[in-house]
Image 1 (cartoon, rainbow, N blue to C red):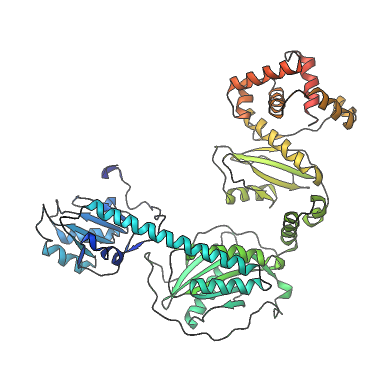
Image 2: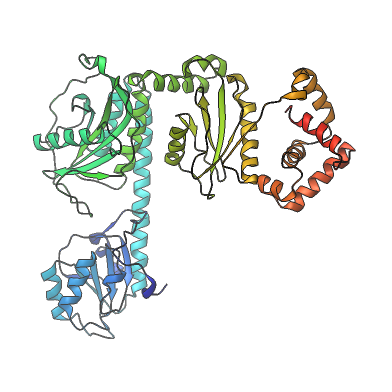
Length: 542
């Protein structure tokens, strides 16, 4: 890609998937022969870029080590000022063949504007420097992954202890070398671990916790700030504490104790942080329940290291699960049902935990534009349908599945194609799941926003179900499940080859071959309406 096609810095570019490389680490590679001759010694490198343009500002993303031989260097002061304005981290200047040495005016400009300037010897190609930076990034990424893995194992082990919440906070504080606090929306500390921050930092931390636990739409899921050199962050948890128990939480609160004072100086982040609370990753929060009080995980550390946010995210998930007993009864009941199912209970045994008895409706859905739905998008669909029981799917092409309970009924949703089974009791949900999948395939083939499976009525309803099922098994015995599925889809679409191919995601010739094979195995003429009617009756019994 040439520079003329590169994006403007006004477009926010995503950060690299690896931690930044300290300038000192690159200078420590003696084989490169790099020498810092101007500017500060501290800098974090996010990228390496080579440019001989007189003004590379429009093509920089920020955080680059810019390498140049100064081919078009005419005004060093303006050149350096533009690099600093673009957010470049450092400038590497290659001597020879254009310049025998680094121009003194460039050295002075870098000192004046605070941009690190490196002298690149003639024997060091720019590609060698780039390769060294990428290698350092890979090593940093490997260290980060190992650190996150160790923290994940320690947090998971702590969550299995008899006192899981204090244990998780203790491990989190130890791995982040700071303070971890479980706070209510009013700023009350339920559990604490790690060294005490300064009063200024503690007050700012309480404000952050109040920010992420605000009971209103659009409240952020996390927020960060700095106070007195201390890095602060707060994360909203899924758990809630019952308001009725807010007056007496002696069973939840952990006694505080004085710890050793904070050691070391905080290192500034590579990105500029606002003085006031800065919201990160804004996400809609679930609607609060009137009987619950939201919780937040608050962290105070002397520095931020790569992987800290990931470690904190693991702790947020664990603490959300661990605080489930203090949530509203509906959510806690669903969590209990999930646990019992995982431990071997039958669906009928956990049904009372999911709410009032009644039929359930299984809905399958896919985005109309064909894009895969993430967990947040799937959750929004569930909320629109009136349910929190949503499976976003994880494989490519997986449908989103939603469980609805009366009085909720599926309705068309903008941007979605839906297929719904008829309401069914809990033990029959696996069969309803299959029927919802068929309904979704039918909706996609016919380009309708919602297809609902219709129950057997009329003459078909007069035949006893057991006798109808026995007849269907005997009639369809020669067919394999894929052939039976193809035949059912083909008949439901009135024998349309093209629509059946769309519904099954296969070529139309494949549909023809399968239908021909069905006719051969059954020994029937599938062009005969009587034959089609009998087969449709049998296939409806599945």
